[in-house]
Amino acid sequence: MPAKRTPARELLFGDLWEYDPAPETAKAFIDERYGLFINGKFAAPKTKKYFDSISPRNQEKLSEIALAGAADVDAAYQAAATAFKSWSKLPGTERAKYLFRIARLLQDRAREFAVAETLDGGKPIKESRDFDVPMAAAHFFYHAGWADKLDHVTPGRTLEPLGVIGQVIPWNFPLLMLAWKIAPALAAGNTVVLKPAETTSITALKFASILQDAGLPPGVVNFVTGAGETGSAVVNHPLAAKIAFTGSTAVGKAIQRALAGTGKRLTLELGGKAANIVFEDAPLDQAVEGIINGIFFNQGHVCCAGSRLLVQESIANAVLSKLKIRLRTLRTGDPLDKNTDVGAINSKAQLTRIQDLVASGVSEGAEIYQADCKLPEKGYYFPPTLFSNVSQSHRVAREEIFGPVLSILTFRTPEEAVEKANNTHYGLSAGVWTDKGSRILKMSTELKAGVVWANTFNKFDPTSPFGGYKESGFGREGGKQGLLDYAKLQ
Ligand code: NAD
View 1 (spheres, rainbow, N blue to C red):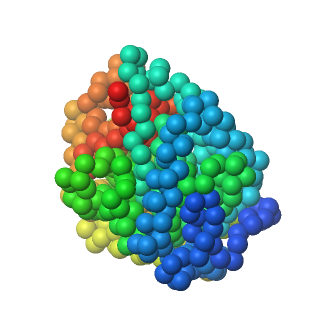
View 2 (view 1 turned 45 degrees about the vertical axis):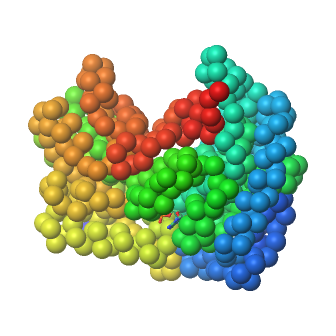
């Protein structure tokens, strides 16, 4: 006899009622082919080469993207250097007007940009619609506010721009990372050559049309597209006054080596393996939501993801049972569906990396749990996964998986929690769940992480600086501190 359908059973097993499809229908307006955006115009690359941009949602080709070579990167730097002469002399009130205009134009086209971001990167539409695009606009608004107040950032000192900034960004938050990089650079009076990641160039190229509509002077922002070789040309160009890089620790280290002795400034926003620490006095249901959000937001493609859960031994079984129940209610699948919680993995290469690391977790003896979910036949997908009985030496506890995979470890005392949390090469973020305010303060001073969230996770705001310790990099983005990283003090 089939089990009786009750709300409680629905919550427990999540398998009785199916949601109807709820596809987002707005158009993304993606061009068939994009050139390079240099000196305010799109132009064919001197290499005459293009590469395909594939949607991870269904492996369909979305567009052709220009492959920039060294001569193209040089043209972008020349344009930015020429533009710097007048942009850096504009009064802050004038620069602010452009930044406000960009923010408003992005808001006007928010739905279109959200769909493009989801098609290109694979993230759920509800995240690109409610997080990525509004947050990108918020960064331009926030920095528009600073542009005419630079004399007040550090009392008694003035801020001067550095020059042309070379910026290289990853694929997990393509538009948002662009905003984090461009808005403070422009507010401080710099000009920019930016390279988006090769799997997610489309929203940057669409954003170029916003810059045109905003009337931004030619050359102030230039986009060169391509993979690592193009990135290397951006990093090593002699006209760069500073390099701002967000990406993997391995590439960050190579850039740091390449720039040593050149006098160029450098900020690095790299990988992470954050501990999300749950004490026995924490509000458990709230903590479970925070754990789920901490690791499954954007399929776990988040540098500050709470990928290591440290749970106090006395509540470990209770938390694990609650997590398993919650996992069954997560909807994994088409990112364009408004009900989807976990979308597509960004690329085939990233899917293979996740699969390899998960296989290592199983072979090293951790206990795996995956909700029984039906994945789409085409596209790159991975089911939300929990590993319990994980020990510190397991690869899944040490390496950044950058996917929807949570490793669960336990601790007995606060000292042990700190010891385990800090036992990593990384130091980007951490979470603490407890009822005790004094414990939050103590933990946040002892955890070696750039951001420590208390009774919440993955909360961002343009006013709040973000960045890492140790192999998670150095420099800050957001807030006054982020602005200072784009200026010299006089
Ligand atoms: P990646 O380092 O492979 O690539 C990042 C960017 O660097 C891409 O645009 C890529 O084309 C470019 N690149 C590759 N080789 C290069 C080279 N030799 N010289 C110059 N540029 C080069 O990283 P990824 O796989 O795109 O992104 C995932 C990584 O980014 C993760 O480790 C994640 O933690 C990190 N990340 C960090 C933050 C942060 O704020 N700390 C934010 C997002 C992502």
